[in-house]
Amino acid sequence: MDVERNKVTGARLRKLRTEASLTQLEVASRLGKTQSFVSKVENAERELSLVESFLYADALGTSYDILFEEVHEGLVDAGLDTLPKR
Image 1 (cartoon, rainbow, N blue to C red):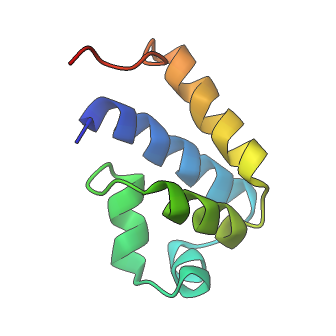
Image 2 (image 1 turned 180 degrees about the horizontal axis):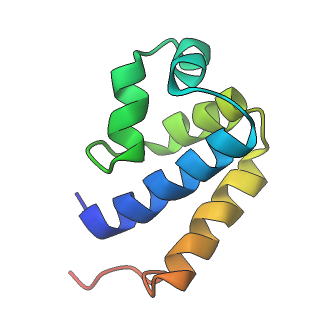
Image 3 (image 1 turned 45 degrees about the vertical axis):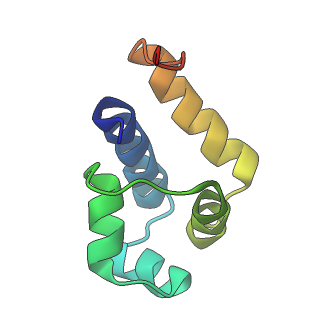
């Protein structure tokens, strides 16, 4: 798990959620998950799969493009927009 990238992702998802005036519980309900799931994603304790990312965008009431652009912008700002060397 890439904690630094997950921190950026979680922060950007939290930003989108608050801009949509949604609580963690509301997003969780839309996802069919628990509030704890949303909290773990926002606090970099849990990664989202690609499919979950699409579902998360829907739950936030936004487009996939906006979600991915928002996360990418955060990664660029943090200097984390390239893949780590393996």
